[in-house]
Length: 256
Image (cartoon, rainbow, N blue to C red):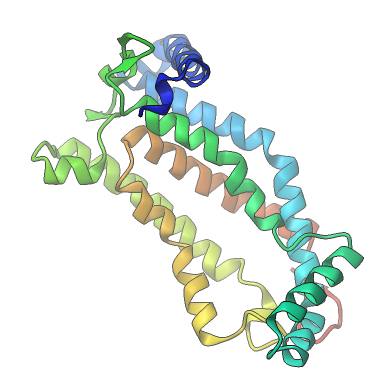
């Protein structure tokens, strides 16, 4: 069953389609044939601006985790054979600090509906019974409704598609690499953190590049959203790291 055949979701998708088409028309004198791509970028910036309070909450939570790292490490040592007790004591510690161990997930969860709607908008040939105008748009000759994987394996890949996706992937990977190197918590470098095992650090490092992998499977419009998002997130985290510096492993105080 198609969930977007349900009246509430169909109305939501139709409204999103109308809003994006309207915004594309508004910026067309400025962007020409790439108006819809610019509209997607502008929507991304709007969403990210609305999520600034969530980003601040995430930065506060990261600062709290760095400060609590020695206590979390001690709890892990003390209750390593009692997983249930470890979970209870960890949650109790966070409650005492009025923080949440899941605060870092908020930006991802908040954006999930937006990326889902964008993904759907550029996959469907019809929206609420009428033709999908957005599929007629492109970015420098690369169709907004085509993913890199479908273009390559479907035999429809063009030089324009390869260049545009290549540029977006380069931006995403560069932002991920800078994030991994510059924003690594100081307590990962051998400090008192429950996340300092080599295996966990390798997983955390690989996760920085997951967005680039995801971007090759989604329509170009969604890849644009992802590229703008990772750049915004990098800049925002650098600014917020200065506002909410992490605590050094020595416990001597916060450090940028």
